[in-house]
Length: 340
Ligand SMILES: N[C@@H](CCC(=O)N[C@@H](CS)C(=O)NCC(=O)O)C(=O)O
Image (cartoon, rainbow, N blue to C red; front, side, top):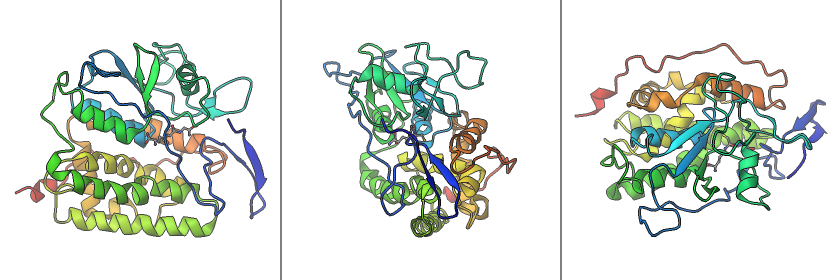
């Protein structure tokens, strides 16, 4: 594990960088490293990780867009009885007394931080402890989501894009909504194509804007972000959803970033060239997805704001959380007009 580093910025500030978020190229551009645990749950009962009811637990943070897209699948597929879940606290804390690593920690009681719960399964104090339980020589980041196998006591997978595929298809024998297929065969290549640019330029694009350490990579990321948002606006002026007239995985993935946009990314990550609420179609679309039954429960805005503004002291040294804008995503939208 790397330790915290400090340096003097070009503007003469002393900046202390947490290795948890500092994944930088020499150019000053942010680069997200690949996830390490990549096993798959299968509906085949003979497989190493069979899709058994009660066997798996999803560790999330309500703050995290990658983790909450997995939670969205638990909700829309009706998997809450089959797969338990819990959230860490929103603001990163010390994960060990013997070093200065900052990361996801659990509360000590269920009243300490509404929405977050102590780790009843393993008694872990931090996500880091779960990674250490799963592997003795793990050296990567201690990220959420974590799909945990209670039987083998290990991490099955910590890559959200793969976890959502498993939740979509492999648990259908025990899901309450097995007919919902968010990655149908006839749309797969279209979904894959949309995911690619939405991930690079929007989901990860906002991080590239916010975590850039030089002006040039920031501007490059911001320009790509706004080109991609304009492209979404155009698609959504003709279609109700991003891949046409039915909801797909690509909508859940895009939504996780859009719902955080005006509240956090516009300020904290310097994505302020245009706000979400200035895009009529994207804004109404975000409300439309928010209002899909189950989706609103994946959004705890207090966790989202407290996390970003409170866990990156090198961006926001005083941890001040801006008051606005408190957009009401449950208010009426006009997206029905797109459905014939
Ligand atoms: N590739 C991962 C990325 C997950 C990720 O980066 N999660 C962040 C929170 S938004 C995290 O847990 N960071 C903790 C750290 O870096 O220590 C996924 O999509 O599942």
